[in-house]
Length: 122
Ligand SMILES: [Ca+2]
Image (cartoon, rainbow, N blue to C red):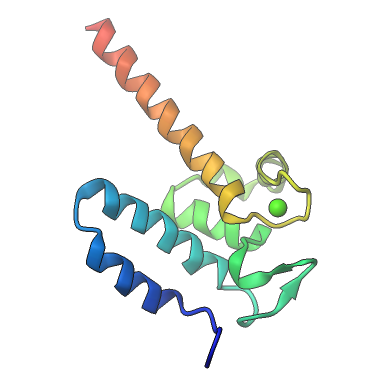
């Protein structure tokens, strides 16, 4: 159908031009986001003022954190709520890719800080 979003097809096309490790990491990041963002509801359904398939609901976000990052602390609803609110820059109750990627970049930066600390402590 014309204009229909088809993440699987986009992934195949993307993969053909991306073959090194960092490119694959980016592809994985985008793919994981869209896999979880499309779990609630059907394609094209609006949640508030945004397309549900392109954003993470709180439930989708929790599932992603538990399965992909093993962040068991988000089983506590209060901790999940704080994290979601911190990332939800436009306050619509959903995380779009730009809001989600802030968390990933922050976590990567913290990993780098730990690596540097370990290297300089030894
Ligand atoms: Ca948002």
